[in-house]
Image 1 (spheres, rainbow, N blue to C red):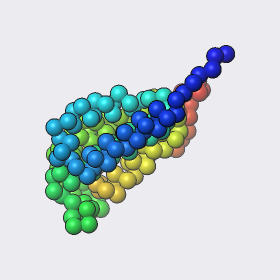
Image 2 (spheres, rainbow, N blue to C red):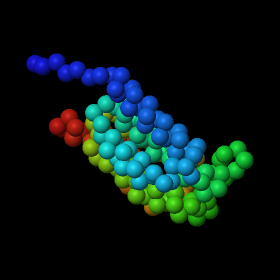
Image 3 (tube, rainbow, N blue to C red):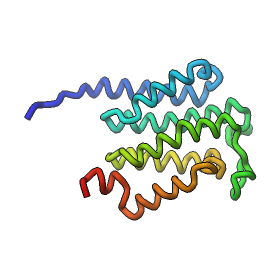
Length: 170
């Protein structure tokens, strides 16, 4: 058996860079806008990196960028919160740019993770992101995705999720 050497400093540096992207995207969305395609392409390349810490930070960065887009659209109040109402998504609509980002970038990533990821810590992070997004964005965050979100939640609860079954050959 061959030894596999992993330079953990490289992993930590990469995770820090991804973390920086997320925080910068959250706090300076206008400055990131000209490079957003490059940022998202880079995050997409790292979505299924071999180390869970990288995947963890990619998931977090997607959420932070979404919050930055909300900030860029000027829909956050003085406390930097989106004032949403519980109930129907129509009661607290999200800006079109944010909905497009969620539907084209974030949810496809979440769903692909549920379908392909075997690391339960990464799956846990994605569920945490969904919970945090509900808190930050309100019910409209799931307006176009609720059926699939519930499908994956129920699969996980029924112990039929990929990370619980298919990844183990069951």
